[in-house]
Length: 141
View (cartoon, rainbow, N blue to C red):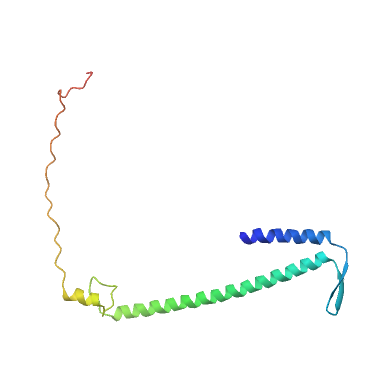
């Protein structure tokens, strides 16, 4: 969106310049000489610069896409390798994400965990609500 806000005023200014400068002028560059209006020359130069900038951005984007494709392929191969090593490595139940030779796994295997017993639940009957003073009659009845 920002590119549109930058590009649109430049294009409008170039079109106005081309519309205002239509008289042919003799132009020269080194040994070459030609006759053209300055507006047409400005539009041609702008189109050439726009095409050059677009081509350079396109080259950078293609390079990034190639990098992303390579990275995705590497991730796929690493995941496949990880899955194959996970199937062959011995694991202790409860610690599935720890490597087989980790100190945490050795400490876990050395000290077996005590069985967990749920706490005893005692139910107490709810206390009866005290009666309101003055009986059970409603006022106004």
